[in-house]
Image 1 (cartoon, rainbow, N blue to C red):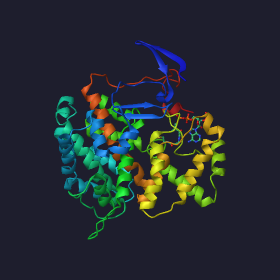
Image 2: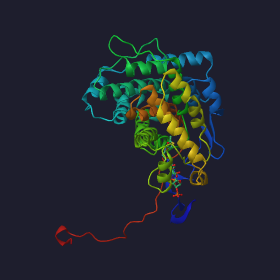
Image 3: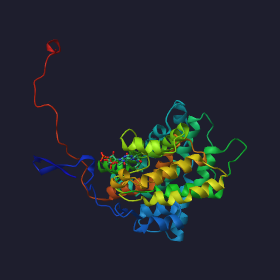
Length: 403
Ligand code: ACO
């Protein structure tokens, strides 16, 4: 509910809405969500139809340009994405300067911002000029975020970088850059490639979440696309946002190791001693449609990998218990996208600290499209107000006189 405390300012009243729960910060024509009914649409197309028939790269085009591509447009777009996969050798050297202990999200954010140094004509902070280069910059980012993500993993693991291959599709190329060894290409199962593509597609945009709002906020000051999405990566990093899929798997592992069937954990969550990670959402007060889609493909991925995962059994039990428990039902807490995405990523062999990096790759189209809306718009710089609750005016005290 909106806090009724208000403050008169020159321009009228300031409304206090903690965490912006009821504040519309912009008009946007990209993504529609109805949280009560569990509906998500990209540019009007239901997420279920896109998940069934589209691909991440096609959905990226749709999100960025507003329409499904004609065949020729799709060929051009994916051609640009493919062409841009390599990273400048100077950027390899920046990577090599990071300590091995660096978190991949820190490296990714830094490297995305560094792209502005290598493509200064696309990062002028002059909206008209940056928009003139937009098509190239957008596909460059979509492509290079994947290469940079893979490089951050290889760097962290002390492994040599693997170059992208022209013959491979978007997700296959990513898995190749992550897992191939010298003289031995990693060849993933088709169902694994499809599952990863689906995870990326389902994450591609989600209206004014924390990271997308951050991108818009930074863009509203006139910052270029690279700087804006780099800020988006930082915002995504936290455990209440993009980091939740990691937290889900850690939670499931701990429950598994403790021998709990999930009941004790549910009770602890109800007492406020733990959070059921992957549950609850600021907007969805119903089942997150993305979680439903991912929940349904888990078994297929495990079958393709010939794996049985006790974590999936625990997740299914937690879900069943929570959906039948008044604590969760009354608060409208349902599985969100992170509940099952982490389990799938873990099964594919993606290390835990790369989960949020994968989310960043997926969210890139949404960040790009939101940056474009701001850059093409005539809106003002985003500048929220606050309700000051600090000290009243007081006089400075010299050091010698301080108690
Ligand atoms: N487990 C147990 N209780 C919960 C949970 C949870 N996962 N989520 C919310 N609650 C409870 C709160 O304790 C609160 O209870 P109270 O009314 O008795 O105080 C009530 O539900 C409302 O919760 P808020 O934290 O006020 O809800 P908010 O909208 O601010 O937060 C959030 C949403 C951050 C997603 C929250 O549900 C959460 O922490 N979930 C777990 C983390 C997670 O899965 N994040 C991923 C979100 S999706 C994404 O970013 C891609």
